[in-house]
Image (cartoon, rainbow, N blue to C red; front, side, top):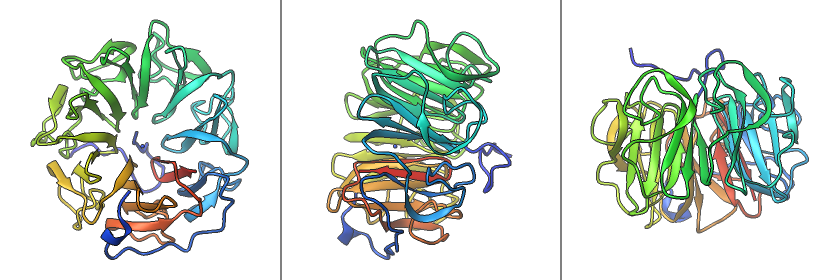
Length: 392
């Protein structure tokens, strides 16, 4: 039996991990969205731990306002938690806090955003399974939360870290990404460092066992411009606009035409002119310069958006009826896109059992549908295990 990282309700760990033409989306259903203040981010989907930030623990099938949060510059979502980077360089966190991943010094869950302790001058954030990262403007990285497999990169493993600590020796970082039990950092020289769980080769260091509690350079990889960590696999967008992938590959999520695990990076087959990548539970997305989206990997819940449900795709295929895309995001078994044609809507597809598609239903979709967000302009959108947050 192949490993699976998710069930429909949180009795086992979930996993992850960041625009189409309206006329191109056929069969789409508009959401009867809940009223929300368009100055606040909105959220929808699973909410047992308060990860929607709307003061409740009630699931939402359409967008609801995140309480008391404005000035959002960037978002990143964990399995059952959420992070927001504000314009002033500080970070807010809410939702599940069982491993201290909210960074407030406690392990208490919070249904509204609260400050992460001691963080200032932050320029990027990344939420993993139950751990979190922040990139500072000096190129250093702070980490907090679960450290069971060394995913904080602080030279030890085990236990939890309730407030942010510096990853010593990791410098000149320009981007970060966090998977389920591992982490990635892109350096300004185009190299990638990885740390944490490596049982499926997700660190890309030439072995597939154990873990590393210190950052190690990903093998045979250079000229990288962007990174994305999924549940147990990783993607790297290169300067030449091609994509490399490594780690778990049970469902073809590496896109190399096989289902063989890879402990060093391999080329994603036939994928060129890419502008953005996103990694979900066991599937991957790429946004190309022509505004189209490619997908590959697991399609059990229609998360590839190809108009059919079921079966793996081991090389990239086109998401149907989707053009003019300006941003993408991958959840556990669902996906999202932002549109150039209309900047207050979101396209979504895949698993929807808890309302994570935001269209007011719990109907799973194998092709994109349109969701009205109530925001004047959606500037960023992120997907967690089973929830979504969008900011304007």
